[in-house]
Image (tube, rainbow, N blue to C red; front, side, top):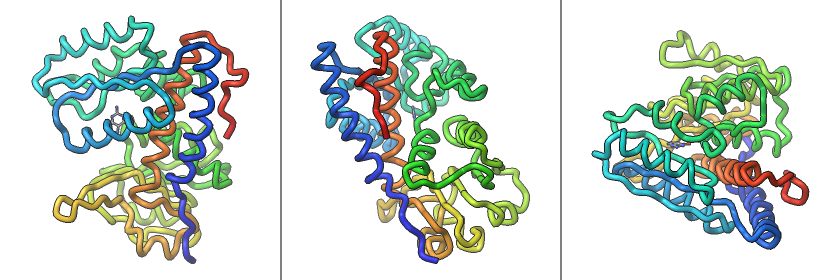
Length: 297
Ligand code: GUN
């Protein structure tokens, strides 16, 4: 079998087009547009690239975006003070604190200080709790949300399927498991202490891999013929400066039915869902019913 590509660049471009016209409508009708503030602490090279990318995408479709750059030595107290100010600022609809944070800062205190209505990452306990009980009024974490949307756009069914998720992070693995359960999949979450990983992945109809430990570690021998393979990892090889995922694309694409490339698979869909969440936050905060502002994809 030769796998078809799950092309996140293409699917996210569809979203971007409809977001753009929606924002033009909002500007014309309400004389304002959604706004996102990103807080970047320190100089993590990957974070610098991710934040620049988010800003670029926001600018392309007319979302106002600001970045607050803070020194790696900023105190937790100072960071919480900045978040509290942003929470009260009516002109700011979405707040995102780029992770990881320096080790002297407690990540969960910072994430939970963001007002749930402005938590466009969907990492706050309120939004995570809503997702866990199937209440979709909250904001959904962008990467799992983007993966689900991409599978739907390619008409890949999840109902009754064996979905194996590799990685149990709060950002990807756990919310992905919740979304898949709500979409009637049978879900297995594997992690660093899982025994006999290959025996589990071999039984999967869909593999979603978010480990980021060793590039290309999921080989064709881990994958059943016809499996759908989604690779969330982005591992940079500092010698070649190339990005790679968890999955050995060359061998796995010979047995899978669908596969995401790295880069150009999940990444663009994550940004599209961040923009989706920023628009949703704007609409909720301004009590705007969806009417002609609904994105239908
Ligand atoms: N670092 C890596 N991925 C993410 C993400 O989705 N959100 C934030 N805030 N930081 C990240």
